[in-house]
Image: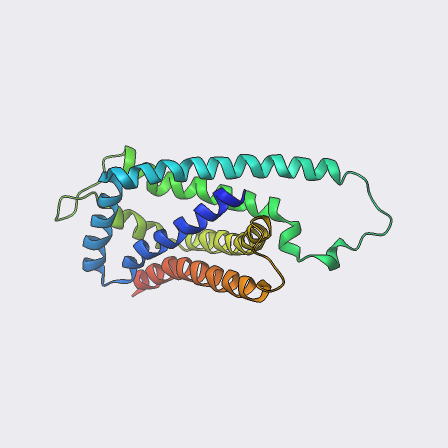
Length: 210
């Protein structure tokens, strides 16, 4: 879980940096974003990394299900006096729910963008690249779609917080000496990633209203 989770955390940084092009003026954003998408689909090194990404998502999901089942079996006994709610934050006790929301979000995300780019005949931009930018901006100009993304990203944020701290413990770096720094890094990373991604659909939606 720690290995696949940390790889996915690294991928989110790269994904965020690439998608920041959506904040450029529309014509420049279209050219840059489509070029970036073409680069990702045509480079053998990036293709190899993408396969690692797919395997990591699948592995992370499967192992999460295994852990959830083991935890359910281990905690099958009900205690008359249960204070787990005061000993841990709510999102660490609801990783199954958060993970389910994220999984549904990934299905929507892959279907609407990845699948369309890979397996459908998209129109081309002026440079001859598939016009994924138009697909993305049209999706984000629907309010319900934006709201779905915002909710999913909030779930991802809480998932990242718990996962970051859990991975730090698993890897042995959650030492009393470094606890403060690990917590700070976890919060900074999560806020930057989540606020960055949350801003994109809102920005595109509001631009579409003007």
